[in-house]
Length: 228
Length: 228
DNA sequence: CGGTCCTTTGACACGCCTCAATTCATGTGG
DNA sequence: CCACATGAATTGAGGCGTGTCAAAGGACCG
Image: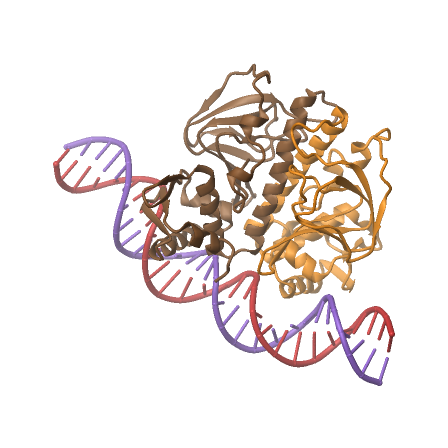
């Protein structure tokens, strides 16, 4: 599932790729390797396949004509990207780090397209989870303050890719401040200020700009929803 | 499709309920009638069925513990609501006007659930369209100004339910200012001011608070994306 | 006619954006 | 190993758009 749901733990997610893609699903196409900052596909491209991310992190985004960008989601291993209803990709997708993806099936183009029922069922479950997850992101963009958004974002990553370690839960931030800003509907300066504030408050450590250690997880979780 | 995509015309939508639900889809459950302001279901309720809206308008929303609300979408006739991946509804759903809904199928609860393949295929197409559509709404909430959001909202409704008439395209706004505000991530005062501005600029007419006539459609469409 | 609720309008405050400068991390060539 | 360049991140100062609070207007209904 995409990282769009800051309040839902990975453990609570009923399915992820391991469960979604049974071993007997035919995977004829070879995996693709995309270097950091290279595109996987662009908005408007013909949508031939759906990808599963095997390794690395991707960024799905849309851009307005005047250059404003909205990052839709960050895709991590296990996530499925490129689902479309009309044979066109509806967003850009670029690699943030070196990425390995696996084309898993011809895309779902029309109601008349014939697809393996079992696969279809699984994709539907995944799409439903995705929709539910995106609804959480609406709440973030529409109703949360800058601090809450940043806290929510960190909580999501913490549960998704965090490693319990010495005095906290650690994880990387492979994406740039600009990516985070465009994901949360803020500016890079606001992201930076919010992170600094969390650091000064002792909630997190920032050994460097792309590594986070959450010291006080419950505090962070509270900050994700309380406007105080 | 939900009204979450301000820049996509209804004509461009590749499928809606008429196409989605073939006549031979078994519909055993009777239609339900919900009066205005009555709930259809609530977040957390057991998700037994997916509904198709036959008549009226519904509001799907989520609420934070401190009362902040985000309206996810407004559902119009032909839309499908209540899709879930885990047997629980993930948002509240209430009738804005008198509503008739048709339970169309037991919900998609798990990958092991057995479902008619053809139905599943159609639901997947619908879900994919829904995801693509929600991505547009992200752009609105994350990157558009108040005026752009209101203009985008009106453009969407214009294409969805507008009627070409005397010197413009007319349609109703059955939802309250509060509903619109919570949909666009703004306040009722900002909604009111934006609509007043559009009226004073001669872009729209507001015969009353719940009826709109778009006079200059191309101007409105430009305002939906240009920050000027 | 009076009550209630919704909408509109106004005045002001504040959070985030904008613009600018500084610091930091990384890589390159001498 | 150290200057230097380059791009990203941080920090600061100030402005603006939207939120907040308050009051007035309108629609609806008993």
